[in-house]
Image (cartoon, rainbow, N blue to C red; front, side, top):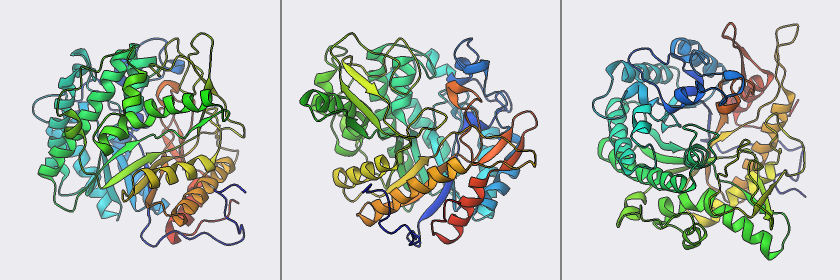
Length: 477
């Protein structure tokens, strides 16, 4: 029996009384207003305006116009019945050059947003970095440069000073794996660079920036503030039980997960990761004392999950662009040229990602075992499908409801098995700019007609609202 499935399908699954139900977005994907009130370009502005980088030439210039329509979007959240909203702060909106004083207008936008959320009984949950590095800092070298970590800590302090009296839960980084390895390794994310050594340098400086930012937040925030980081932990499975395939899984697990959890949660880089990548870099960018700076106490670990990863050993020439993270002639996996990635069996979303709730269940139990005592939040989980408004104006997405039902069943089973999961944030509130895919993929539980910016709650929104109001998993139909 699939361990993610309840043994009694007829019995309704009830979540713990104080379980936090939320939804989530990211600044560049929804805000628009890219040149208003002093905001300067981020790396995603530059990347999306570079021909050939984003499908259909789409950009986030307007996105879903959340910068102007946020009151309407908060009403949508209120209708969902969520207790929390996880949003990211746009670094170039708050600190246009990535250094120096903050923009009062930029901070005021997030103050208004937080105040309006609180007025509706919705907890604001802030992510400081969801990939929109100020272009000024990229021009100075970006995340491969140590100074970027120092600038990030300074920026964290500015936001904490402005929002610390309103926001209780803070996340430093969202998915640093994507920032480092897709941004500087394969180049399928901004800034689009393709140097494996720079990808590893970026990973370290993201880790360092996280640690320094946690310290800056602790200095400024009240004692009851909760500080976290969000990782897109990969649930890596070997294709077979052969020693070669198991070693391939170990290698990818090191680059996907332990290169971050090692220093952040354990205070050291894993020796096998350093050994695996010795042909790429000598790791001299790690200074004495860096692991201790990175290893800061956390109150929560955010976990993002969409689909598992299936790998095997490969004896032939390197295989690139076959790992589910976009086609590229360059690999996001330095030191893993002889690892092959395979499509896991089963139904798939519009992203081509296999729908496999058991991977989430198994991942949560691994985190339970590897990091006992650390509370967890599911900070992203969701799916893209080819949604459309029907003749009656309604948007029906039964596939998404089935996806959510299966994955929330997995979360419930993991809690029963001892995983300390405190909340779940549905990705995403709105259809939005889906990075390199532009507007071709819809993850929202609220449909957006991009021509008019009209919002239409999908059937999954109504389903999720039933769940948030009583904590009991509704039927799929």
